Length: 592
Image (cartoon, rainbow, N blue to C red; front, side, top):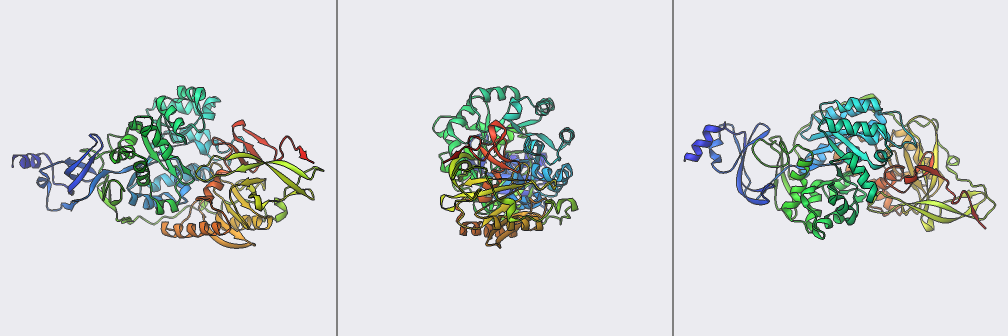
């Protein structure tokens, strides 16, 4: 009785009480039966004597048989790559237990500029999702020196750094840091002075270069580790690791081996998706899926939950507010059916129930999108099949060409060499060998420029697939078996303002319209999933077996930061040499 009276004397009645739950304590690594009291958007009490906090208006929730876990934190995601604006993205991820994300809105900024970033950041505040905004360095560098839309300037980066919502700097690219890019170095300096956070990008870098980078960036997390030994090396140098399990990027299993096989300290590991398509969200989940993947790969369930919660919060320096279930923290609490399969049944964010049994239950306000977000595909005239022909000047019957190699599960491409037959001075796709034509069409400045090449790995037997989403600069990328279908796909994407398309014999098999900046749908999450499933199904019908073909296609158009051979509207680019290279090997050497 004394403890009841003591609790009653210290606290006002709670708004919401969760009774009889099994608390997953991310501090002690234990789970035990207890109760949680919430007042407003904060947790005020955890423990026994909870009845003392029940008032006339208190809602009591019985969590018997459920585990109580902190809300999950996504440490690196580009939300536009889900093709949903932030309000729909919140509706898609919160039923999976995600209550906070780190993002930069860079794709939207590449097309719509700083005003688009500001619009979406403000829109995020109308959702229950906590958004930690970081400086969009990919949107500033874009594909430089292979193209820039003119949006996101150095001055605007410094302006955004002063926004009260700015949490830090995203993507401290190794290449820009080591070349001494003055903007990157100045921003790193200012971010550190302000006590903000740096998020790294150390793709395919090890050894002395990695250490030289670390000397400059200091305390940093990297989401680009793809191999166990790479993750271990970074961990031993003090780099935090964000294990990525996203669309076209499935790295987590390899990263977990650094812990299970080599004894890495799991306290320095967290999770991200980086790229999460609506289909992945619907089929596998979000950060809850990262937890399940970790458990399947030998990680203790509570340790996996720590990675998704308190570890991330500590790196972000926000563990005073989120990442655990304890007094004074934001009331972000998940009710989970079982730890091994980590099935989230109820999501509480900021003290309010926002999702139950996989459904978002909050009504968000209607959105009026600004006019500048529409009609952003600027190509001066309808394109013809002739615009995509590839001619070579040689008397040889065969030539050796560079071909982009695409593989499932990674956005890193290979530089292949393939022998091709010259037919009346022209190079044609070789469908039997899966050597298809790929084109990149400049779609921002009305220039009409087109880069052309060949790619292997898509497996199309007929038709073409195309997108106006292509990472960094967001140009139009199309891969196809013939020029008629390629031109048809390009013109249809131009007509509708952007999207994903699958065509065959100049007929549309499936389409997902992305009228907002050529990147985002303005339809509900459920409609987007259905259309995207149809697009994927149609691509498979043409022979493509890649799990996420449009994300693979998008990253063939990224000529910086992630190797190796890519396509831009200027032609083929060898990433780490930062130069355009000829389609023909050895400056056009032919084969007799």
